[in-house]
Structure formats: structure tokens, C-alpha cells
Image (cartoon, rainbow, N blue to C red; front, side, top):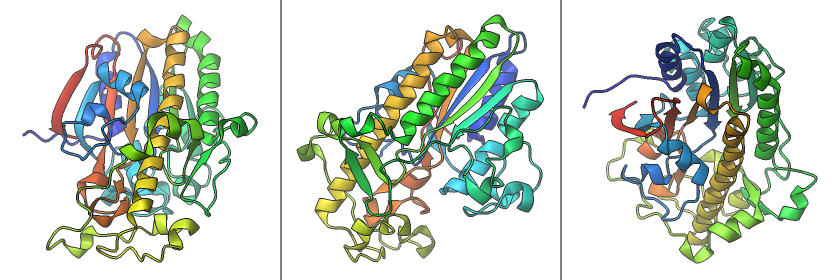
Length: 364
């Protein structure tokens, strides 16, 4: 197999440069947080899949995209991974291996992909989680990457008490969840920039970083009841670590154990220290529900591109910052060397080129 060394947004820039020599395209760049490729377009990749994962909007995007079935991140942790694909450089070059270091300070003044578009006359807007926030992006979401004010949103109904929470739909009327706020903002920005985009006077690069399915798994109650019956949720078939696993491959999943409901179970995260089966099923069911919730919000944003008449002039890309373990090998979250932590969805829709769908198994 030929191995293609590529980074999500660097590939986007290469394709954009190749395709838009005569007519510039707009770019909608979508990022999910902690989304492993437990999606029907990836059902042949060998991962143990929930049979009825409900992601109609991601599936519709995949059907008209270049779908990379074997895309893997450089380092399975938010800060290093996002820095890597947003600058097109390996962590060994960016010098970012944690959640606090800022590449412009420790690595160098690398131009980010939105900054590249900005320098070439595009309006660039970011919202949600694009770079890892806080000190890892200079405490200002790398302001020099954007021409428009950055939007964050408010994490309603989230706390360190519960690793997951289903919120009754009527409580969300006045306090929407953060991914809905991000989608609302993306739609608003699309409407704002659409006039210039439609008449060709200006172009946009809009990066939309959804916060789910990252912990805590918070979502409308109706999603869980409508799509994930409790009796359909299964345990992982491989709940223990492999024989002779190197110690470097393991992480004690402190992120999950940091929530009080999981901490109360008194599990230390060591090898083969598994959670009770009931809790494993609850967490898996909640993760799937958070994925479906994020898919709904992503669909609203993608639909707005069509509603505004921008579909033929807008490239749409979707990736995640890394994968996620849901009890496989007894592990949870990321930061391990298991394929489930490095494997990520990656798809790229280019109007007129990928409309019929293109699938590759080459390593990205």
C-alpha cells in the first residue's frame, strides 16, 4: 500500500489550490471532538460497531466526498493533534505534546490554514473548538488566524459531577446546548458572508468546531430514547488488554475518572481494572447519543450552505482530532496507542469532483 503522509487541512489547501485555479471556492471546515469513526461509512474498517448508529447528515456528506477510511492522527490528544493538522506539521516540529504549550511560543511562527486563507484575501471565521483553547492557542484562539470575532458559546448543563446527562427537551428551549449555539452562530455567519460569496466579490473560510461527542456526554433526552434503546447497547467484545502489551500503550483514563459519578466507582484505571458492565453500557449509549446530537447540528450548518445557494461554490471538509475508546481493552478516552484512539473520520467534498463519492483505503 502506498502511504500518503497528509494532514487534514493541509490536504484541503492542496486540493483547493489545484481545483480553484480558475474559480476560487469557499471553504466550510467542520471539526468534531473525540469522534471515532463509528459511522456506517466506516463499517468495513474492522472496528466493532454499534449496529444502528444514527448519523444521517455525516453519511450524506460522506456519500459525496473523498472518504479516507484510514486516516490517523499524529498524536491522540486534542492540543497536539489540532496544532498538527492546523499547521500541517508533526508534533516533533510544533513541539506541542500537551494541552498547554502554544506552538508560536515553543515551536515557531507557523502559518495556520485559516491564516493562509486570510493572507490571501478570504474572510475567516472560527467558532467552538478549533485549536485547543486557553494557553495552547495563546489565550485568544490564535486571533491572527481570523478576520471575524471568535465565537465560543456557553456549556449549559455540563459539570464535573456527571460524565453524561440527558436533558429533557423542554429545558433546552431557553438554555440550548453548546453545539446548538455553535450551529446557530455558523448559520448566522454564513448568512452574513453569503452576499459577497454569491456575487464573487469575496470568499470565506469558516471553521466550525463542535464540542461533542467530547465528555461530558450531554444531549437532549429524546435522542437517547428515540435512537438507542437500552437493550440494544452491547459490551465491547475485547474488554481486556492484549497479552504482552507495551506499557507505553496504556493510559489510566483520568479524564473519565475525573467525573464524580465515575470516581465513586473506585476504579483506578490500571490495566484490566474494568468498569461495571452497567456503567460501560450507560457510557456507550450516552456517547452514541452525543454523536447523533452533534450530527443533527452539523446537518443544520451543511443544509444552510444549500439554502443560501452556495453549494456549488463551497468545499466542505469534516475531521475529528482523534478517536476514542469506549471500554475496548478496558480503556477509555484517548492518549493510548490503540488504533481506536488514533483512527479518525476524514472526508472532503469538492463540488464537481467528488459528487459521486470516492473511497480510499490508503493511509492518511
